[in-house]
Length: 354
Image (cartoon, rainbow, N blue to C red; front, side):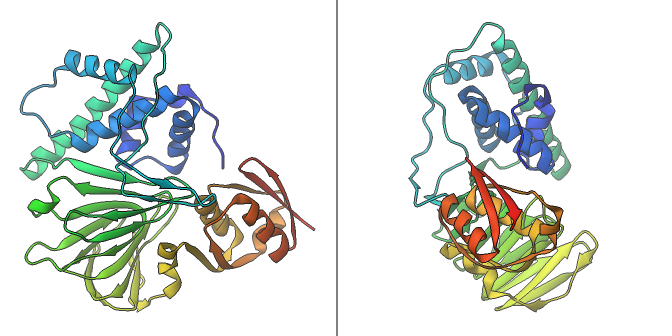
C-alpha cells in the first residue's frame, strides 16, 4: 500500500512512536511518505533519531533554547553522517554498517515553517525523553544510549558489532545496539529480521528482544524475525544453542530448530526451515506463501509496490527463490512464472490475470 505525503497526519506523538518502533504499519507509512517528500522532513527525523540514540536521561531539565539553536544550525547546514557505503546491484542493495538515517543537504525554510518544525521536534523530544525518564525511574537505573542501524525496503546491511560478532540485517529492519556494548551491555532490540553470528561471551549473555520473544545466547548463529506485519516472532538456530523466553515459559533451541511465538504463546519447537537463512546470502525464498502475504515480502525485498487488479489472484500461492535484483527482473519473473500480465509504472507493479 502506498501513502501520499500528508503533513496534517504528522505529530510529535506519532514521530515519538515511530522512533521507538511502537507505531502501526499505517502510521509508519505516513511518516516514511513525509520523510521522502522533502529533505527538511528527512533531516528532522534524522535529528530526532540521533537525539534518541545518543540521549542520556539528564538529572536536570533540558536547556530547550540551546537545543533548538543547535537544531536550527544543523538544518541550515549540511549534515555529516557516520561513514557509510551503499552498494547498488539492482533494486535490492546491500550496505555496510551505517547508523540510522541518511543526512540531508542545505535546504532553505519559508517563514513560519520554523514554528511548525519547532513544535514537532521539541514535542517529540519531550515524548522520547519522558519515555526514557519513565523507564529510568521504573527500573532504578539509567537508560543506555543506542546506536541505531536501519534498512529500508530493498536494502540489507552487514553489521560488525564492537566485539567482532556480526549481524546480517534484512530489508526494512532496525537494530538498536547499546553504546556501552563493550562494557557488558549486550541487550539489543530488533524490529524486522536479522541473522546473528555471535562470538562466545563469558558472563553476560547476548540478548535480542523482538516482539513477544527474548532470546539469550553465549555464542551461536541464530535468526530472529518480527516485522510489524507478523503475528508471530520466529527464532531459528543455525548453529549452537539459545534460550528463548516468552510470557509463559522458557525453552532451549539447538541447531536446526525453530519456534514461533505469538501473544498466546509458542507453537512448540520444530525443525528449522533452511530457507529462513537464505536472505543473508541475497536470496528470498518463498514456499507456498499465499499471494497477499507474498506481496508483502516481495514489496520489502525489491522496494516495490505490487497491486492486484483481480481478487482472484489472492487464491494463488507463490513458491520460488528470488535473487536480489531489479524491478525489471521481478516483472519478468511474475509474468513468465505465474502467467500474469504485469504493468509497471515506476515502483508500482499492477498484476492482471491472463
